[in-house]
Length: 471
Image 1 (cartoon, rainbow, N blue to C red):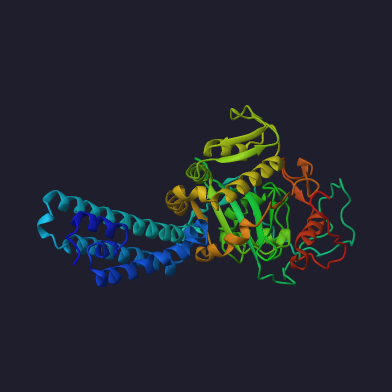
Image 2 (cartoon, rainbow, N blue to C red):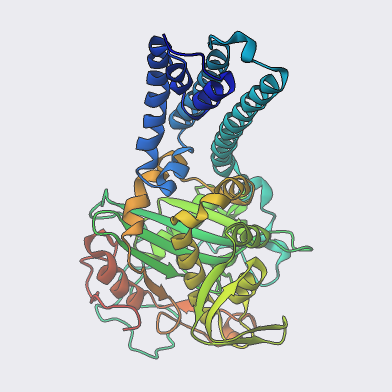
């Protein structure tokens, strides 16, 4: 027969692993009974974590996984409580249990409740954050005011759709023609659907005090092919005007693309879709690639997200010196907090909208890479909670984990800003004095086919010659 063992030692061993305390005091059957379920639960956790912290963190957006995680954490916590209590009370030396030992065991039990309760709460909050992002009404029609209060924009004109192709030759470099020679198809039909590609429209919404409507001053097409692990980012200038609409017609020469979201919220504009779907389809229409989902954040939300990530490191190639905002960011590797990162993304007084768009691509690439690293684990709960209130998306977040591996394998996204030669600035006398740009669809078609091949709406059309960014 085993000698009597200290009850506190037995309780502590079962606190470490259910069954250890029972084995310590000679209760081998009980040890097996407590150990097997606990080891099975811990093994399940280990298998999930073996796929990476990013995969595990994104999995909580899946309701089934989240509820399973909560259930396993709760049952394991209860099992640990029973194991500790049983080990403490199962010792043969009953007189060895003193009051202070009972207090210590009680503290062990409280710590189990606290740890497992916290894990369950974090999982639930993270799941709810995903629900909030999908239900965020930031860009709902009800929140977008009539754009008629903005004198720089006009509603779409109901002119008929132009002829899809006027000439088989692309517009020569430096041309200032008011109408591109190749226009998007009025009824976009993608020749080949790529099941391995996912495409987002990333939107930076400019909400400002005193402004009655939302301007989408950042519009970026981001796409990932999970088979080839190649990613592409295309920024569309906010001042693009006089463009054709995917459902027919053409907007006025001083109607800017960044006002389309607000304009489409009004029935009088004539869009057959909701405001956000109008913007998604229009960007896909112009670039030649369908947009699957959108993700939007406003300025305050952007700052908060960068802060929650602990800032971001950017290799600044060209110093930013913007006296209008008191911003100076030197060349070199710079660690930016949320406020500095926002200034870096928005400054244009001493550069241009196109340089600003390129900087936005740099910041988003750096943020995306940081999100899938183990270093983000401590900030993950706060980040997920923040995302639920600051980000709006229609992406089904429960499948987000499926793209982690492919994203990690992306070495560097292919980036392009549709500035010159992809657009030109018409004389302001033709736009009512408004500073606008006009997209050169001929060159955009060449780029689209070079990037996406048969997936592009421009593929196989006369006059289209695939060419990389800037050509």
